[in-house]
Length: 298
Image 1: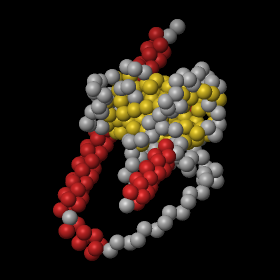
Image 2: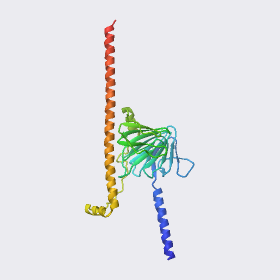
Image 3: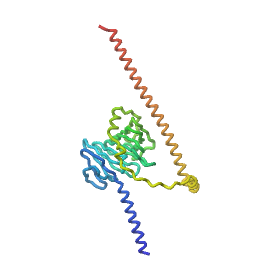
Image 4: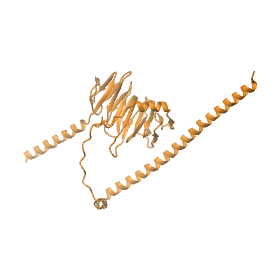
């Protein structure tokens, strides 16, 4: 009996160690870099030079110097990536929804594919922002963060004094940006100039389909009939409550998105009308000045 118990305990310990090693083995790769880029692995105090192909685990701190950058693959496929710009400090959190902690500086995030139901968020001292598939630039200091979107759309939330994110989220869509001051809600949308937007899109080159490694084929899950699924819900009141709550949350999110899009479109129309009126005023002034100069004449 004692031998059986010892065997079971040993098996459980080995299984636990295997699970921990698998969780810790979810490393990400350094794609490319230039200049002075250093890394402090989790639990270490001394930094080491970063190099292409280097594995970075959860908790690693990346630091770039002047005129330096590092491109990091955020998954094994390389479809999701981050570019760390010069004079930037980033901590790879990876676990949970806050995947990246931008301590100071500037990063570009490009997400081509995120698993269903998963959200990728970047945390700064002033805000938290993220999405499920898009491209955006995040710049931060201790007092202010700026979120600029060059593909898709991103949600932004302010951060309270206790470090928790504010409930309300503000959307930023392609071609616009928001600023967030410390302990305040995000500012109004601001349009990005065409020149800056083009520069952002050139900053991060997406990997082509030929460069992406082939994905392993997923095993087909056994199909569950609608009748069997319905019977399962009827027999489990907890599942019914969870399903109902999920439906309610989806409806609320959809309504909030519609309201936010309406507010954004109204602000955009107002901004466009202001620009047009300013142009008309300038033309009127120029035509008046030219007519006055002709009337005065020599």
